[in-house]
Image (cartoon, rainbow over all chains, first blue to last red; front, side):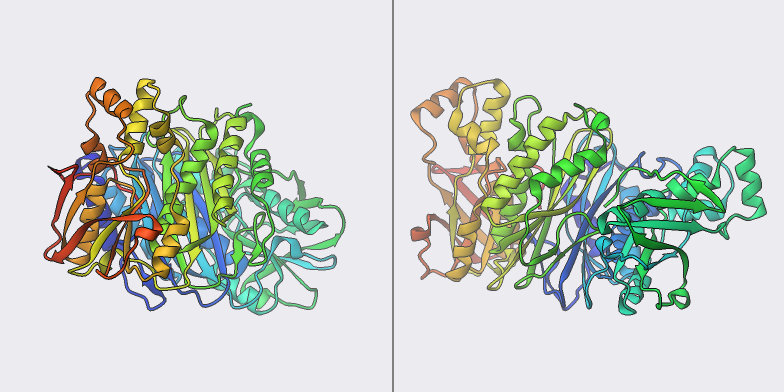
Length: 315
Length: 315
């Protein structure tokens, strides 16, 4: 059934059936003019939209993965600040012929990832309008310690990367070409925001972090500029570059270094820590160093220098 | 210049020039993965989108009015809860050929209304994608007293209306037809969220309220259903129905009663108070009564019964 046939109010009722759940700190959830929430610390807030045909391939993306993505991009921003996710608000604009079954499946994908990371979906807005479906999620979290910030890298800091980069962009390429690269495609379809890791990094004293949503090069550039330091990064050959993947990349004339430097949507965390701090036990690995400077980035990937460029901007 | 020529990052820089302002309770504003905010009470959160061609007439709407609307719909939801607006987050999806000058003018319209009501615009997201421009605003406010809710109307309560209804829908009609109805058109273009009034209503003990964003009939219906009471409403002939407006309505075969019952986007507040409470000094007038019941609404406008129906849903 199409959304225009079912009607906005009926679709909203069905969405509320997916999202509604009581929680003591949420005094008013859905069904009023606004939600009311008692946060347990300073509030971290971010908003990002994902758009059909821009952020995911229409017809090749499971419905649940669309909702998953809408939650993931925002939960990753909270992770980069060291925040515990608490609430998500959803603003949906879908075309009148949007299939309602698919919409509800996408909502369940969003709900699944939100629930996994402790976030409740409250409030929201649904509109039918022309153009591609757009899922806009606002994520609210709380802090137990000072946030990790982009402008807190200091000369002498070691740069650490947690999570892989490059996979999601190549997964998108594989999906587009109809190629069988399950690990890469899974990285694109089901990106995992590193929420627990963000909390751990903050707890051990990491001051500066950014989520790599727009490519390692561009996000490193942002970190360097915000902190007013130069960064030298040396990313080793990634472990996902198996012989099978290499063969596929060669056949398709795709460059894994470019994917690592410029590919977005992996939601790895790039962070900076004082030299004495060992983040390896948390699953991060050291990939560089900060020096006094003016915001320049020297990026080397698999022993070769790379241009610093990135995807479309993200939050 | 078009957005695609200027580039997302450059547009974001210009937007930040409009929005950036320091405030002690905002620890991180723009330029990081997320904003950080120390609220001074329970948080009220709402999100709503407005869409070019759906919520405003492209080519007949001043740019500043688009941004004003995006803020107004959300500030009105906070007003209906009795919340003090504190933060707005903006997610913008615009077509690649979006004129950047117009976009910035719209952003200044949003900023002007936000500032007027004590809200800072922080964080945000900008994407270029096909389809009409969509402005999605998340509004965060704080409470000093229990929120006014839809489900708190009690049998015996008096229903009060603050603000006019019907004007905005007729203003939209006038604008569409190119007719000169400045007061009605202003009501459509520059709706005023009743933020200060919401705070006052809450302070004097009003327990239940809703903003009339989807028409008096539909929003009264929501109030009745949420509270499980029957409502009898008798709206007098509105003061904006001047001889001049009457003549125009007749010439255009438009019905002011339908506009009052079904017209949305006026952002009046409909609220319920115990019989002893006089809200007239605050600028509200009594228009009905709640009785024990099952969520039915009897609506009379200008001494004639009206069907209860409404516009597209709002938050």
